[in-house]
Amino acid sequence: MSDLTKLTIAQARDAMRKGDTTSAEITAACLTAIAGADALGAFVHHTPEIATAQAAAADERIKAGEAPDMCGIPLGIKDLFCTKGVPSQAASRILEGFKPEYESTVTTQLFDAGAVMLGKLNMDEFAMGSSNETSVYGNAVNPWRRGNDDAALTPGGSSGGSASAVAADLCLAATGTDTGGSIRQPAAFVGITGLKPTYGRVSRWGIVAFASSLDQAGPMTKDVRDCAIMLGAMCGHDPKDSTSADLPVPDFEAALTGDIRGKTIGIPKEYRMDGMPAEIEKLWQDGTAMLKDAGAKIVDISLPHTKYALPAYYVIAPAEASSNLARYDGVRFGHRAKLAQGDGITEMYEKTRAEGFGPEVQRRVMVGTYVLSAGFYDAYYNRARRVRALIKQDFDTVFADGVDAILTPATPSAAFGLGEMTDADPIQMYLNDVFTVTVNLAGLPGIAVPTGLDPQGLPLGLQLIGRPWEEADLLNVAYSLEQSAGFVAKPTKWW
Amino acid sequence: MSIDIETARRVAKLARIKVEDDALPALASEFSAILGFIEQLNEVDVEGVEPMTSVTPQRLKRREDVVTDGNQQAAILKNAPDAREGFFAVPKVVE
Image (cartoon, rainbow over all chains, first blue to last red; front, side):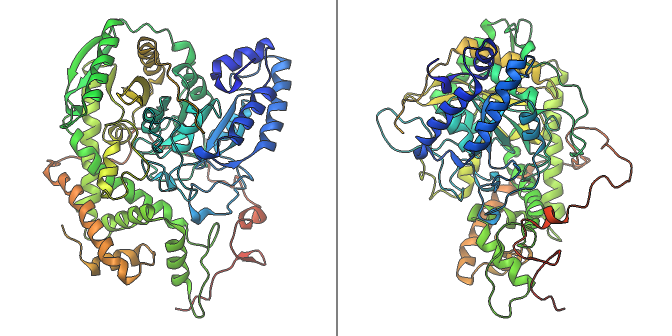
């Protein structure tokens, strides 16, 4: 078979089961593709020995029959996941040299299902960023370019390496994590599918924590079917994460009928922002028309507190981060600063954290420290948590009124150039998450699906938001949208 | 709300991040911009709204209060920047 790296999970699964190819062959093809793709900056730690051994074991299982769907599928793993004996440093200098003695629940489940790890993927430091420019490893680069312009574009963030690797066919799929849009925004920027599950669907154990009440891991894949397959392998109850939901995991792939007749799709008026680019507006209208043509009922809805989601997020996420990142103190793991004569433990903490954290992480830790500090806790943190309750209530109301899913743009623009936002103030960068962050605050599932190209030939995506725990239904609506949009464009290889 | 240099210094201290004096003015102005953005939240009427503690209304699972793990000293110390005689080592702490 040719172009093994271009296979979807479903195609590879079926081909391996029929004996048309093997995991060893697909894995070798991916390793070759990765070796030739340094210019993308996607893979930051390579694990070819692990991959080759896992592929051989997977081929044995497939030969024996009844192998799980993910058996033999080569994946990239975001650097935020702890992988035993393999560097896992959240793209931060402070975790330089850290090799976990344990395996995250998500990667354990994927490997138990026979999946193959090709290596670790680039990301924004501690998942804080929207362009992958805060990584200690340097930038990940979008395989897409604007027409014939060779300016390097961002693959989005924080799961930028995952997005770049999947779009460039370096791996069949990748894990991502999403705290404010970090799966969906990069997926939209590179023309792939990315799903953030309902909060609690996927165990957070062994994933480096950013903002614990918002973080969820999810699949980043070449299409909706793959998203369904991979999600099934990632989720399920885990006693090691107290917020993990003890609910049955449905067969997500079986839910993909493409039949959405009678479904009610909400179009939230508050997402029609001032100054929205014409191509985004058109993309959204086209997507609405596709769902309508497929038999869904379209209704206008209101989510009145949408405007306050980003400011609430920029209180809650930094507050939780300042608490979570307190563990990086130079004592138990990672980097410790060289100390001067007479330096005590406080100097060790302060120098270690100044050297180990990059500017964006320092900024968020300090903002979080401020909003939690005595005298400001009520004014900032508690107020933000109240507003968060109202944002969730907005969604509860529309779902109670019979809305099955909500359609919005995934991002306010197509991928921008690396370095283009360097001189902008941090808030300009934060606006990237304007359509995605509400979903994290309300704990809902959301999926980004590529549905079109902008005038410069860059991919654009729409977001569907579902009811809590109803990923199966959400995936089916996404599947219908995918079929109608017929997005098949791929980046032209330049790397 | 405008953050002055002294407040920026205090926050850096609380966060245990060393910030050089010459970097404080820029930091203070970034804080001011971010807090200015956050201040939109004051427009929202939150009277009578409980602060959210959990997005999913579920009771956290409990387990028996028994030892389920342990005896992993070597694994725990494996990644320490400085470990001696089975302990994490840190600079002298004198209060």
